[in-house]
Amino acid sequence: MGLCKCPKRKVTNLFCFEHRVNVCEHCLVANHAKCIVQSYLQWLQDSDYNPNCRLCNTPLASRETTRLVCYDLFHWACLNERATKLPQNTAPAGYQCPSCNGPIFPSANLAGPVASALREKLATVNWAR
Image (cartoon, rainbow, N blue to C red; front, side, top):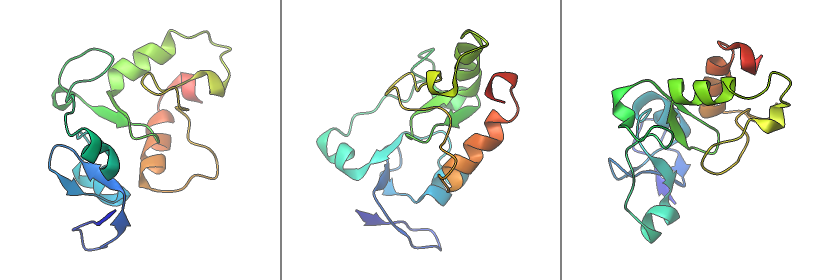
């Protein structure tokens, strides 16, 4: 656990692997949109990280990205393409993170900058409506 360096000074478990700093969700969305962020404990166990999209294996920095509520990060185009290939009658629970199988859709009671940014992005595509 650490303290985010932003003006909000929030205590957080999140750690940016690229910049090696603690980050709160507000900073995550605003300043670390293309960075690999997981828990500080995960970083202590293994500080290696892959800066590539797990769907296309090209650098995340090369295109627009989307962070899921599990904090896994993908190119938006890759995630969108994968989701559009699912049948049109796929239930919301059928849309899962390609890395951890967590839900793509944030639960209705989940608040916070990451969930809000994801909801905003999902509202732009037909498969997520």
